[in-house]
Image 1 (cartoon, rainbow, N blue to C red):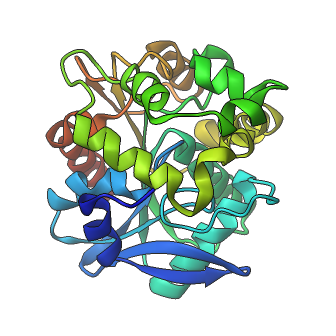
Image 2: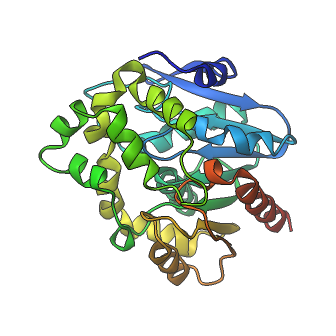
Length: 293
């Protein structure tokens, strides 16, 4: 399937870079400190961040497509571990912003990459000088989340078959269901996202990419411990109409870190950065101000 015009324009703003023998799509922008490090979710890509980037012109920014997603390579025999993705993030920051203060902005799956980076910082072995983090709408505490039918099928013994039989119609239905009624999935956005999923043969990889959910259970102690104990400034923002990373997940995170500032976003679902970019931009600027002070 051909990439849509909007995706081709986004592709032209970045470039392909190698990491461990694979091609990774990277967007970079120069600007003031701290560097904003954008970590996307499943099943999308750095394309999710374009509206938010347009609302913050001043800060340096780095956004990547994780291996297996978006415009990056999509090897069929790879074990798609979030630990590998965290290694990738550390290497890209070393290349593009060595020694520079980094503020993480993470959504969905990306929130668990963020908590792994925070855990490495707690271990004293992080290569990234973390200045703060904003996490939003991610099922970090998995037992409190409500997985979609597609996620459950991809994790089942029939996951490979379901991935191979996936169609754009089914994708639009499943993806649209996690948007709020006030901010429904735009048809062009759906076409853009589907073209990114299909790019480089990615349509049949969903059952492999969903591996991260198992890691959320396996590393729960480590990643929940990072939420509780990481000493840096950590903020949350949450679309309150999210049917997946529900407010029960937010409540669980606040049990781990009761003093964390929260920006609650009424009338917004799982994708605040696509549904209401201005609202998540306000939350980001608030988190940056708190980190600076």
